[in-house]
Length: 192
Image 1 (tube, rainbow, N blue to C red):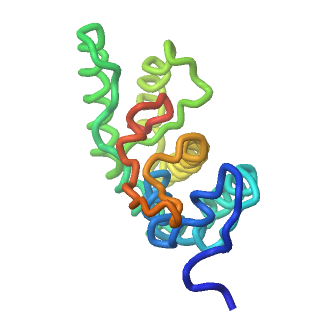
Image 2 (image 1 turned 90 degrees about the vertical axis):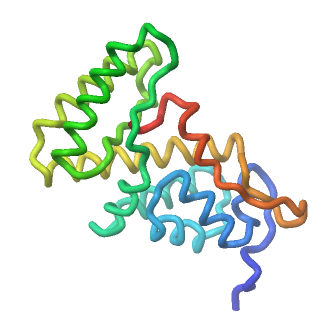
């Protein structure tokens, strides 16, 4: 019978996730994907021997999201576009906000895109072009695209989480978990 206190202790880069109490692990995982079903599924399959196993489980859980789970995850995504600060981005910020508002009005959820394969210098152009292009999708087609982008974004967020572990506690250290929601905004992988 499994130990109700959580999975057995492990060592290595996934130790904080593998050994955290289930509620802390779920709260932290929700910062990567806002579906409670997804976070519960990843928590239930602990311990993970390595990042590849965690990412494979994350993909499987993302592919298994029901329409309601996907709606929950998309609702957790930030609605405001994230742009680098500075006056040089004023026109781009205006264009991005307008395109994002049109997207949200058409599809009823936040625009999600994973920019991990895009150079930072090209991210804004890619973002605007993707927004404009995806506005032409029908709602069913766009939901499938958004689900895939959400899956890709969750993988990128999990990878950063494993490398940084902001906020997750190892029980023996007595720290409390604070979900790293703000961690999303400091990366080019942020959905907007």
